[in-house]
Length: 235
Image (cartoon, rainbow, N blue to C red; front, side, top):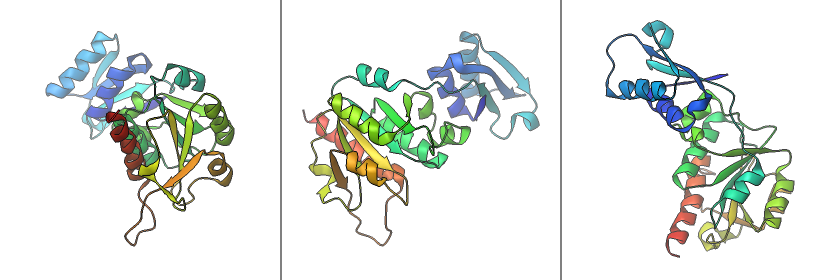
């Protein structure tokens, strides 16, 4: 079980995954319009709603208890992605806040599915859900045993694999993202592991003109993913 807290996160959960919600709790007292909407959404989906003291509910005034996160099979993601497919592969992103923030950027860019390794990857926890602003409720996420092998499978399915690396000579905007593509990101600090980087069809880089060595992971993800959006809008 997991818990999500806050008006926005609970509302997104009710809209995206009502079948996963066991119950909703709200602080006793008068409900504003946003909390009234949560009550209505819960009742429309047959979800129990409890009114409890502020001390028990917490400062957000609302929380929902969810059943286990539902992973999506990678084959289902690939087969159902509208052409040209846009996937995001995350290589050992272990910080839940980074994971959530990247999922939020992916949702905004219309990513069709996200791939993470079974080990050394942040779980879809309450922290990750909060950092994603609820986008994790809408995301289709597949867990795989081996990222490098998965990239080979994606290539066989006709999907280009493009990794982000600070040492790559090709700038991010020079790649043709109008093709089916999986953008591959490594963890902050370590970046892509060697075998994962070697498995990519191409590596691209973002310029660093200041004194900080690298961009925040979600910012880097947003830049590359929205370059994909920009290119595809021109088709």
